[in-house]
Length: 363
Image (tube, rainbow, N blue to C red; front, side, top):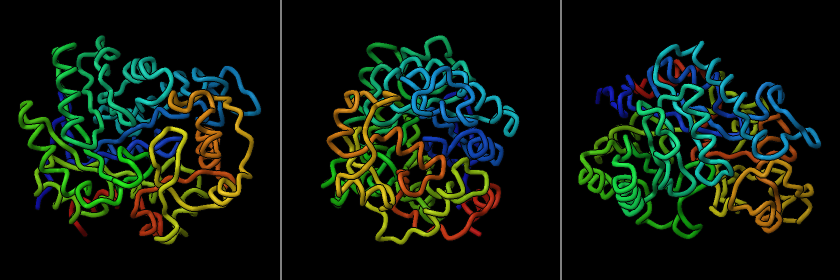
């Protein structure tokens, strides 16, 4: 099967492959820029931009961590990330991922538009007011991440009624993805919630709204997986984990090493302060959490609303902002290393160019 170009709003992707947005610092300028250069959609994560270039764009640090939400989601850093990504991919479509669960969601969407994102992608909640924050940028395409036809229907109804628009595309994320899931722990293991069983109903719902393109995500590994999703009705796919195994990925070399050394049984569903189960690698941190010996929770960065300023972090035993940023900085002992279910299959690093060639041509 030939992978054909696909449109998202006014923007055309040469190949129907979206690179998943991965924070803190896993998909920033280098990874996103090179994916867009090679014809996919590179996605900059807006999460934890305060850590970019050794916290060079942060106005205030406390205990060497970006203080409060305006520094953790640094606008100056986000603008610089896009500037540097554009040096790689020029005017190819480039996206920004902004989680709905974060504090300052609206401000970060506006920052992303100002920074030059062509497409905004939002998951971790139902972004019913997303169009409000990009109103001054009508060419910016809006793409929510959903996990069911019901979620798509609800978003479309709200957007149409309030803003007279519908999503330019949607990403349907199944329960094998890395990081936070749109399912309960139990649903992640149930047959009816497997990605291949969700694609048909979501594509049907999308058709009733004028044929919104649906991108399937979660556990996509190779061209065969991409073809299977397209045969089931998807317009394309989103892939995150496999792009971590590239030279250009912005993750620390230690992060990549943890992934390369992981075995299938090391990849587990974890509790998260965000309130959703999250998939990651069982490391020393997870053992410390289980023994209730993880580092003190101080909520310096105030990153996500559902955490309630550290209340949920204390409940699950770790601060997600601190532990993801530790992973970004290469701390194997205290870092939180997110991955999709296929992460253990990465056994060496390759270039984004080579990976895109394998995905497009199956070679």
